[in-house]
Image 1 (cartoon, rainbow, N blue to C red):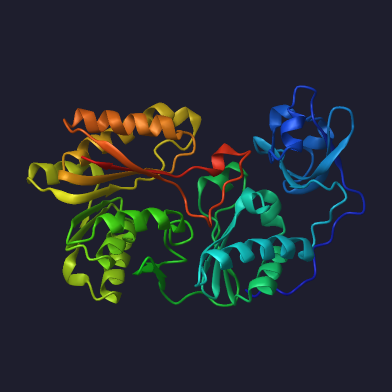
Image 2: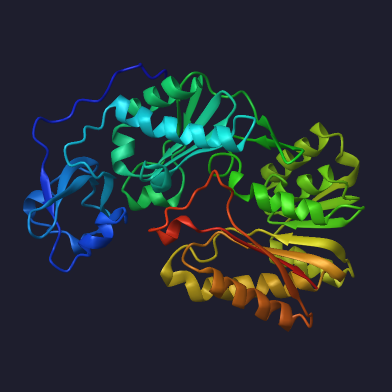
Length: 408
């Protein structure tokens, strides 16, 4: 389906009004916190009857206007701040202003059009993720308002960037929390016929934009891939666990590692990693092993294997506050098992993308696991997401990625 270049989506002549409860932290919202939780808003019958994604004017308890919000009565985040001007109109031009600002930053950061273009609240588009792959973009409209205004958003995206193809990715738990469907589609241009090659840190990655995880590639780890690759110089033997399409291992090979073994539970992901190694002409130094990461780590230990650089980049073990304790135990277990495979004076990299577990909790769990493995460690470096994943200072959840690099 091709999205028509419409100037804007129509807005009602009168925008409904929603109001904060007295207990709500109006000052935090005025100072940039982008969310209103359901227990902070007056939820009378009229508010509960608003369709998900409805635009409304937010007032404080004294009826002082605070801005324009998008309301979803079915979500714990019942309102998301779109514009602190309560009279703002969400038109194609409004989207274009924000996308142009985001594009200007990425053009400063990167000399090729492969990056996260829009990182949700930090780029002024709450709940919206857009990753760029040359002349193709993948959008995750993870909030009801963005899903409802997708046509206008796509028109603005194409107008500002000139991209031809736009994919909608509807996977992920966030859309479920918003009550949205899980139907992905091509919303402009054509569907990619196969994985797209993406150059990054001297390596070539194969991104499956239609069948891969999330948008097809994890751009957020770019600086951490580079840091680990630098440590893999001079012929290091590298183990990349939870490798996906070979993020750490292919970067290490591009920086003269002697060998790399990628471990993942997904056979299709490992096939993409192998295709990336082949595109780089390094398939002879690259191997894969499919299986449960904990089982493979245990098996490698039993086989007496060691590596100069070991990196573990698991999925979010603590995706919510309720999962923090179990998640930290899992991170500790990863650290214990992987530390046993690091050669003397080798490097261990441990990563977490769980926003619910903060840096101190993750570091404590990692150090405990290393200690339980009978190893002593020095912490060399703490890494975060790349600059194309900017953090909104008022929103701790936007700083989700943590990477710890130890010498054992």
